[in-house]
Length: 118
Image 1 (cartoon, rainbow, N blue to C red):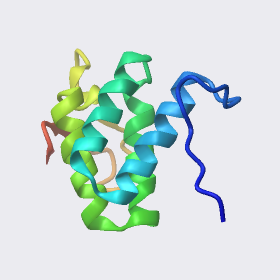
Image 2: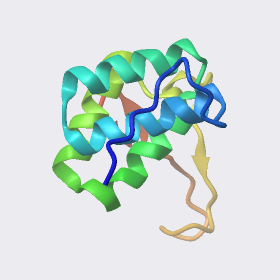
Image 3: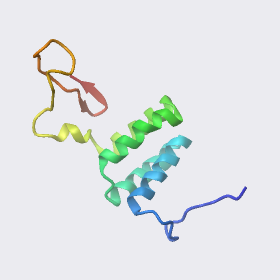
Image 4: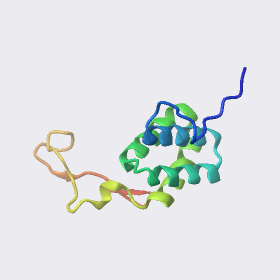
């Protein structure tokens, strides 16, 4: 089997944002926090939407397991700051028909720097 390396200088056929996500995924699987931080900073430099990285890390729970994914989320929060949903002007609401007492309106959980609150 050949050892294949992807270089920034070589054409890969992927756009810069997708390539940045692939590199974050690979770094998440290795658990190398320094490499992960560098790749997340690079992803922000090519304007990868924060929601894409959040989704990538959520999906990584299935592939790399809870401990590595949790480390990756910690690194991502230190690089990106608070959750993108916490920056909304008003808190989102969960529709009344989605559980809980009939007609009750409750706030959706929001992210506050790694801690989820209701």
